[in-house]
Length: 250
Ligand code: ADP
Ligand code: MG
Image (cartoon, rainbow, N blue to C red; front, side):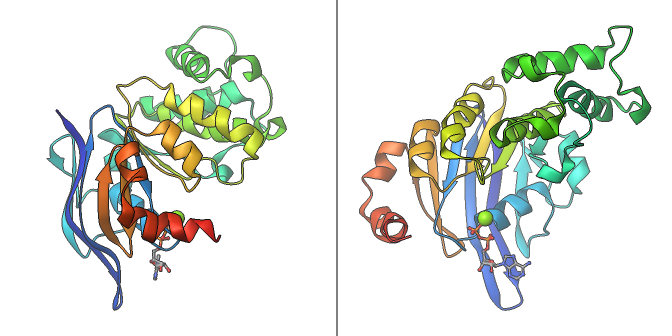
């Protein structure tokens, strides 16, 4: 088995507070890996350490076998690590296709002024259209992003991240703020992405997690409590006590 993304004894302290406590995590290539844990467990902090948004206090991050601990965010993106853009990265006046073309251009190092998909079939337009096909967004290709349902907007953010041709995609609560009526479809689209993209995601909705994931890691108070298949996690008394018990009275 190949490990796509790995942390080794990762620690992040904010002053005296330990937000990430000696986390050693392996994400297998092709995995649909979910990171769960109560609020404040350190899930987002861990993602931020993986992307390079935060610098660890100690420990290391390895991407495709290479140590990337000291690399800046954009250098990690170049090496195949992508995360979803925040919602405000969507240019509301652009169409879906134009937005994705812009993101593909960014990877190709082309100027932003070439975004308009008029005239000749450029590589970027074809690639963008292919991404939209994969995510079943072709029917809204010419809609302005601001007119789309929130679930579809989140999918466009994923399309923008995929435009970087990542080998690993990090998703921090992709269904946050998405109505339940749309979140199932959103997760089905994420699960259907080609397996050459490894996915590590944070999600608090257990139904979505258990449908999606083949591996689940449980983070509690900054430390990894356990890891296993959805079935192992569902039957783990420690997890029930620490995490699911908490969720039950939310
Ligand atoms: P989760 O995503 O699991 O809900 P977070 O990673 O956002 O948890 O936060 C973990 C803990 O670290 C929380 O107690 C939070 O208050 C703290 N924390 C996160 N970021 C900072 C920061 N920049 N400065 C101080 N404390 C932080
Ligand atoms: Mg969080």
